Image (cartoon, rainbow over all chains, first blue to last red; front, side):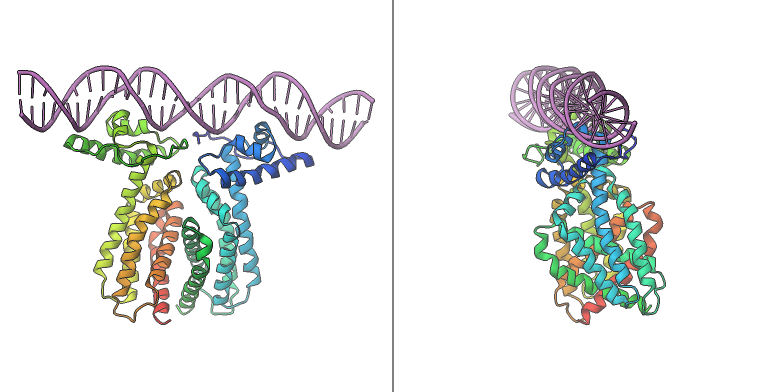
Length: 210
Length: 210
DNA sequence: TCCTAACCTGAAGCTTTCTTCATCTAAACA
DNA sequence: TGTTTAGATGAAGAAAGCTTCAGGTTAGGA
């Protein structure tokens, strides 16, 4: 990827007719598919356009450059995971800390594994695209959700819910990353999930007793 | 980075005279420096050669291509961390699980933070270079070290030392990665280190009681 | 129906960096 | 000192993909 001039990375044009909305959809979907099929080294805007059934020109009408395209795809993917987390955080309000931990981890890993391949693809482009910045933005939101959930627990309150939340999510991220980047992730999810839950429960219990 | 032809990534020529050993050293060192100063987008072999005080031709005499160069630098960096871990693992033989956990985390974070900038730079190129493969190779070794250390504990033995070791290292990796890729890592190490130690102790204690 | 704005097209320009190789210099050795 | 091998040089070849833009097509309102 060429060093890119520091410019706008926002959509150039916003779809107004149904036609173009469909194009944008197709392009974003094709982005993931191309990444999955040819890998990030062979990922080209031309290939994306081909796969989406539009011309490169059209692609560049909605995304100012390759980076912006990848960022959009990444953001989309991360938001899917975030939404899953938000959902559980609401469901679990008022429960015990251990229940919360279990539900959180289950939701997180399930969301990640749902499209394991796509998740790996996203890791691979993250560095090209300042992915951590996006991840932080998106992660901030779900961090708040988790901390807010903890605040509603029926157990004695945590002294620093934000710290606990960030600790837990870092640990989850670490485990899922190692899992996904390792060989045949699906084979190993279950035991790791159980162990991660065990870890979370132990940690949360200790936090409560602190 | 251009898609590279799948070929040998091993050194082309091994240094035999002192002269060339110095060149290789300088090149490897320059690789990190260039990465730190201009970033991975502007990282070029020419720049590395310049900084190392040799010509590009010389660089290509010892590294078949850009990828091999970056891999060598990455491997070097990872091995530094691994060595630090190996060391503690030996020191801590026979201790309690909680002591082991504390020492392990301290050693890991200290090693990572010692060259925080370089660590971040390595994350940034990891994807270009099949970094996970290298990380797995190197990590395998230290995984064994940790599990072996656990096996010598004065506490009751763990039922699955390997699982516990991999769990802990994934969690450590997750925390340190988030830390390093966030803003001003040095500012936040200490509290996170303490909390990570707390987590590890809680986890290990629960494992022992299992 | 006509007109305007939205939308689409894709060949080719442009930039950039990797990598080679013919040639030169320095060291080791007899 | 003469010869051989290791080491170093750097201009230029070659490839590759991003992005543009001039011009064509479609939709929807008047």
